Length: 55
Image: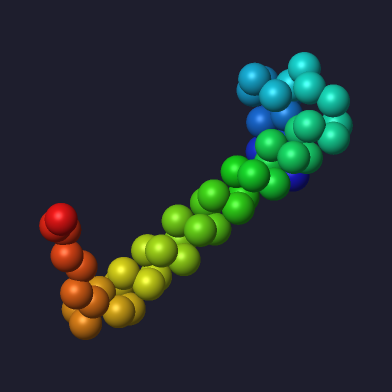
């Protein structure tokens, strides 16, 4: 809880209203969750994936 309070106090979102603070934290949490899901997906199924870069 101390870390979250420090983030609210010393970050760029400190001057925003509580609604925007919650929205910013929610968006950040969603992005980090998606990145962890993608990392899991690559580690679990990466050897059988066929990723092609082409035209």
